Image (tube, rainbow, N blue to C red; front, top):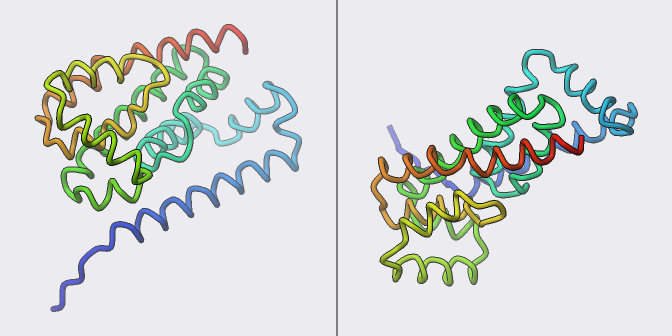
Length: 192
């Protein structure tokens, strides 16, 4: 039996294309049916997925970390709009945490070649050199995960490359990530 080496770049590219096509179909279907004309119309559209609607949001949030195409805060706004502060918080927290942990283990498994395909080369070189030279990387990672608008998706990959202890990484994600997501969920729910 001949073993073939998995081409991670092709798999990620195919997954990204599939996600983009699915998203395009979702948006086109919603737009042509008038589902994006108001918050209520959009809620009704998402509700049409029935019991799967929260699962769809959770999966999208996990994928947006692994394949950094969409900003995570956008999903947080959508979650708050569709499921309220509490429901949106849990969908986003579970999805983003799962995606962050997956990104960490993907980087540990597939190394620099994978991360270079996901991150622009100049950004990769700058951040990788910075992370290698910081003795306080754990604290910086904790603060980046805790605070809104930090490039935490990329830091999950860098943490895997830096071979940070898995237990420490998962603890940081689970302890720091809910506060940023809670902020988005509560803040944006006020305006929706």
